[in-house]
Amino acid sequence: MVHYQTKHHHYNDDELISALQKSIRRGSEEDALYFSLELGQESKSGMGTLLSRLKVIAYEDIGPADPTVVTSVSCALFDMADMYKKQTGEWKMVLSYIILLLCRAKKSRISCNFLSTIVHEWSDTPKKREIPDYAIDMHTTRGRQIGRKKTSSLGKTHFIKEGSKLQKETEEFVDIYKKTAESLLLTKNAQQPQEKVLEKKETQQTLEVKL
Image (tube, rainbow, N blue to C red; front, side):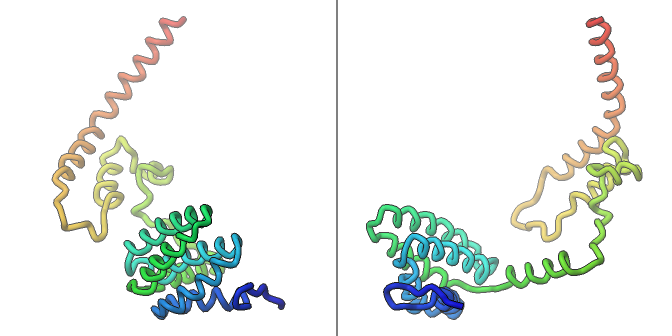
């Protein structure tokens, strides 16, 4: 296979991109910036590849380890692309900033490994995952068929105990409205049949007036 070679130092494009990402993974910021400049200076196509690859690196090699860096890099890439269009050379300063952020950030490849694991199960495993019982609530047809209706006590109670359950709920502040909201939900449940009767009467009266 014949690879495209860069004009300045005649790197194979695939090796250049690989060197850029591996340098960032290892925190080799000087190498990372060097290879980034080679790619970004190449052409509009090279810049497009650089922008895309740096964004992928942020999510793939840093991800949850430092979400603020991922956000900062994403924003900076927009600025870099805008400055590149103006052809003033100032985009290189933004690139330098991005490379430093990526190289010095805490890193984790959990997002990539997580994706690989679940994609394999989703695409290559014949047996599918079952919808959990806590999801079969008043918002689903199956939930309503087994009595978990919006107008039933069973449906409301199931939603409060199972459907709205939060794992790792924050302890930074107390939800002072939770009990009130749940009480209103249960009360509304009792009032709902009467509301439907009134709505039906109003509809009938409207039809009679039209006739």
